[in-house]
Image (cartoon, rainbow, N blue to C red; front, side):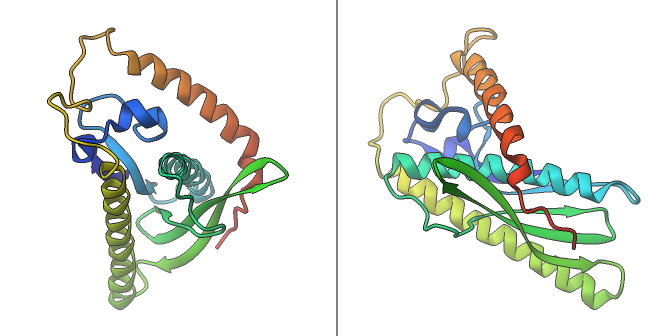
Length: 202
C-alpha cells in the first residue's frame, strides 16, 4: 500500500518529464506521485521480517524520489532528517519506521530506523493508540507531499497543454520504456546497498 498525491495534482509542473520514474514509478495519468508513506500488510502468522525488508525497499524508493525532487529544487534535506515513513502489520502487531539517506565516501546509503512497535489486540486502549499513531503518520505524509508539490509547482507556469495528462496509445508512451529501464537500474542499486540498512527487530 502506498499513499500519496495523484499526478494531476502536480500541474502545471511536468513531474514525469522532469523527474521521471523517481517521482512517478508507475504508468497512468493518475499515478501516485512522490509518496511519503507506504505499508506492508501480512496475514496472521506470516513473515514480519520479510515485511520489514519489503518496507525497506519501499522507503528507499520514496527517499530516492524525494531526493531527486529536492535536487531539482536545489534544496536538499538536512543530513539525517527523515521525512518518509513506512509501517508493517499482520493485524496483531504494528511497526513503524522512518527512512532517510546519507552519503559517505561517495557512496549513498539508505537507512530504515524503527520508530514504534505496538500490539494491536492487547487492549482497546492500545488499539486506539496505534490507530492514532498511524493516522498521525498519514497526516504528516500528506502535509509533506503537499509542501513538496507546491514548491515544484512554483517553478512552473501554467501552459495550454497539460504535460502530465496526455494519453498515449499503447506502446506509444515513451515513459513505459523509461520506467522499465529506471526500475531495473534502481532495483539493482538498492540490492547492492540493502545490506547497509540498519534493520532491527523490535
